[in-house]
Image (tube, rainbow, N blue to C red; front, side):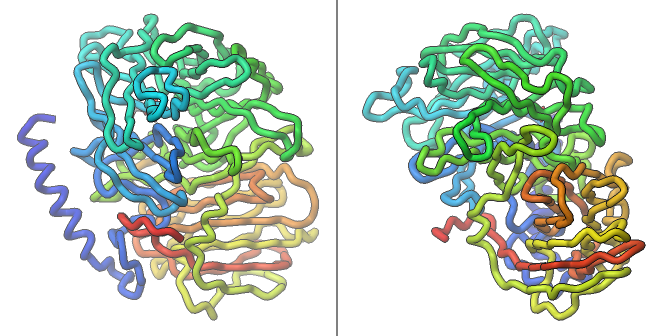
Length: 530
Ligand code: FRU
């Protein structure tokens, strides 16, 4: 982009932004969205105040604050020179936006990475009394890339001794040189207590590599994993590696998250995972013949987990980027692009298919719950509109339990608007799968890859089909059967969805219980103590 275009964009985009904020979208007049009321702006998901965002980065908890950094280009709503945007939250839902934490420098753009609390000051970048936060990220050297070199991705570090407010880059960057491999990025670092060292897991082309360090500044290779495991339809990116108890008991397994683009189940970007053991050096995969997906929707990518969450809390909390590289830069939003998923706690559960990763919305959601509408037990044939509610379902949580009767074939819930557009979430009995159908969900002429139905196989047994859903203006997240089947999808209706109906296509299904709860907007800048 030349300077003139950049200057024009700098002036034009805020103008658009301000006019959009005030704009009343036809048909939306009655919606009580007091903040962030631009068309398609999510109300309780994290979004950047303006401009481009992709992966979540550097997620670390410290002194009562969850830090969230993110891939950010502050000059445009399309991807460009990467910075780390920054926000903090006390309760994972309401975020305070802070100034950009890391700017590109002579070594390159600041690509994805992680952050750790260096409690023992092993790096020497803080002091014993005031240990540092250390961010470990990838430098992407565009000059090198343009010159046709292949070793243009290296790893660098930066540190903060004031709770993440100000960041200094380490003077001897990079701390890990490129060995001559084009895709060499997205370091996730953690402390491995049993072997008393830092471990870095790095995405390297079609596999991951593990490195060790005593001080975060000098790294040596430990092992490789993955050349023959899992899906390989694209480049591996954004890995994570962490232990979790199985069924909340004594047995512990290690989980590796691994994003892949392209090559996702439904095209484009998606995240797979592996379950196994890690001894501080090597990862051993328990299911070498299986590919496991974290989420069966198209819009949960590059997600990783927070570090340094206190043991007294004990959760492993995940957040992903709610988009897909197939169309992320073309989605119809004007002032900003993309949102993060809801924060989710991850668990390992023994199922009929083996040990599987389960995602659940964090309990902090409780802080934004508003009015609730209970549905009576009832039989559903065809479509039944829910009409007697005192609030709109544009931002809502829904919990349903259906009884699977013999002649029920496809049933679920649908949000719709006055233009005949709808988003359907349901269960298909013959496929034994949950699904989200966004074929008729609104505007998708920005990409051929957008429409479609995304199925998540059911792994639970029994006759009770459970759906736990979150709708937020332009997204749905389904946590079915206690988080054992998850689908995250975005959509762009031309008018807000305000209507809701239950349906049973062919056959009758019994709704055993249903609850619809209005969810509050988190605002753009508010940080409250709820
Ligand atoms: C994943 C990714 C990362 C990279 C970053 C660049 O979405 O491609 O591999 O570090 O985005 O913005």
